[in-house]
Image (cartoon, rainbow, N blue to C red; front, side, top):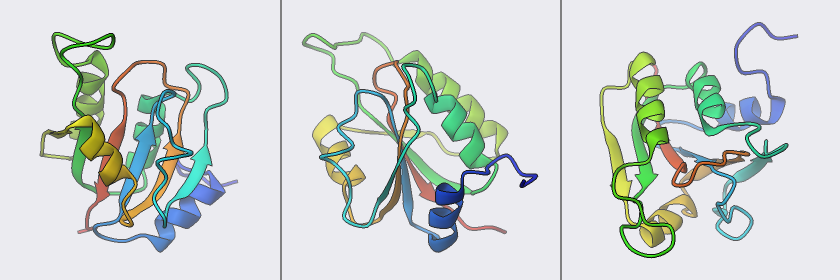
Length: 147
C-alpha cells in the first residue's frame, strides 16, 4: 500500500509519463468523454455512481501529486435549457482547493465548443470520468513545474 493521497495505479502511471504543459481533464458525469477523448489521453473511469467520485474529490487527490500551472472551466450558457445567471457553485469549490494547493491563478473560462476542442487536443494526457452531478463541473488542468 502506498502512503500518499493518490494511489490509483493507472493515474500515477500517466502522471509519471506526463510533464510540464501536459493536460489533465476532470470530466463531470455529463461530459461526452467517450467521443471527446484526446488522441494521447488515457481515460480513467471513476464514475462509480452519481456523485461518486466527485469532481472535488478527484481534484483534491490530483493536487497532492502534481503542480498546476493553469486551470480552465467550460463557460456556462446564459440562454437555453441549461442557462445559469451566475458562475456554478463548484467553481468556487475548485478555486478553494487550487488556492490551498498553492495555485495563484484564476479559472480561465473557455466557450463550450472550444473547451471540447481543448479537452480533445493532443496535449491531454489524462481524462478522468467522474460521477460529478453538478453541471459545468469540467476542469482542464495544465501540469506545472516542480520547484
